[in-house]
Amino acid sequence: MSVTGQSLEDAILGLLDRRAPDASVCPSEVARAVHGSADEGWRELMEPVRRAAARLAAEGRVEITQHGSPVDPDRARGPVRIRRST
Image 1 (tube, rainbow, N blue to C red):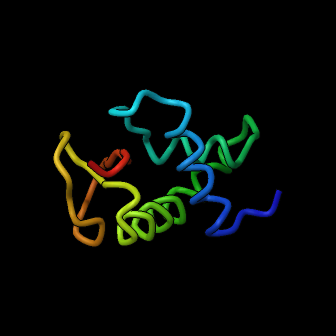
Image 2 (cartoon, rainbow, N blue to C red):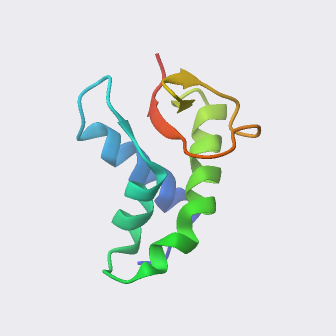
């Protein structure tokens, strides 16, 4: 599978679709799902996943959160979660 921005966005939305409406996902879950291998190569996808989540947030489809509160993806530092927009 070729990893594109669209495939990352699809993976984010797909993981959220399989969760409860108020659930969130970690960018590392998305990276691991897309990478699909047991090696550490998923780590290289972390920034692309965060960028894909930021694009979805700009479209109003998801929110990027820290400690349960929405944050600006451009200013977020450290661990974030991705959830459906409320």
